[in-house]
Image 1: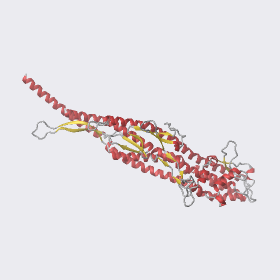
Image 2: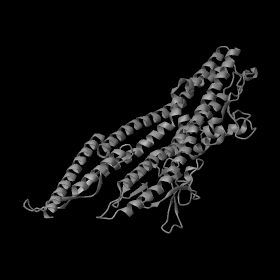
Image 3: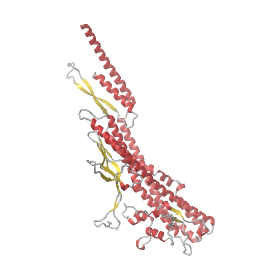
Image 4: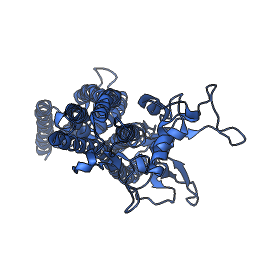
Length: 531
């Protein structure tokens, strides 16, 4: 009878393994057979018997932890590279390159210097100026779209996580109810479901998974429990709304931590933006060079898809946007300030569309007093010490730089300097070229070198960042594949092996059945003799 039971349990677990081989996250199992009665010697006729006490999962907790951690990193790098793919294509495609458009613009200015009255050359200048404006706006729009897409994706990820945390808490509750120490263990199906949920959470929001001594799982973000056994916390905003929307600011996102009494939840900030350090009297703290000291921004979302989207919104996009905005302001200021031989300014070529309905475009020329004040406030050093160069302003707008200046950072964030509003204000009319003589054209052409550094900075810094992310993604995917392969060698189902096990258990079942049949025949014969 013990042999029949062992064979039955073996065939049952084999059929489960075969069926589960196509189920994601299924862990191979085997029946656990123990000695039920041990014969003390070969003379003892009672023999040794066995019994089935449950099922065992082929599982390695250490390997599972490594795989989950790597899964968070891989989803992080994948989300980054996928989000910036359109921008990467735009920078590497000559047909959308800013450098090419600027080169053609300055070449057209050089042609006018040779023949100032040539109408074709004049038309070519404005045509190439429009191409420059299109490329700058296109790049700025692409970066803005990355931020918009990342905001929407972050909302989707956090809402998905909100649907998974109560599921994990429910599974934990079932695991605790099913487990009786020393008597019964939780169903392997429950443990598989637990691992599937925490794997999905790791992919979405990163974090850390802890398997407790009672087989339940706790999930943490930067040390804060998102799921603590049977208690599930949620992502929300400062008002306590559980549904996350794409228009919510990063500093409005919270983790709603359930209190023991369930009445007064605690709201913890998910993302803390960079903040100025201040003295006890409230004034800004500065270093020995007089630069403002800034505390770096912090985020509880470091890995997973959510961590990637936060990084894009909080760091990558603002940095690239400021560099493009600065290039646009430099074009407006330098090009529109070119003067003729008589020291008369040319008609403005570039400008920013007004942020107010029906307002005049910002060109920075003498008659545009508000625009000139804005541009001078950004580019002129304090105390008439000359003009900043592009690299100075980029460094000054970086909150992590020792040269950070809040005034520069604030100026570059002004809506008037949004590169998506950059445009050509010049026209094809002859009046546009009244003051465009040889001197003015030559001066315009000589500006070429002053834009080499800004364009190179934008293209090279972004391209280098994206290339680094691509390399990281490749190494992350390779490591995850290796860990998944190692796990599969332990937890995966080998159908050939299961087929051999099925034959083995069938033979054991048949042998045990034959033994019982033979015993029955013997007793029937004895009973027949007695009667």
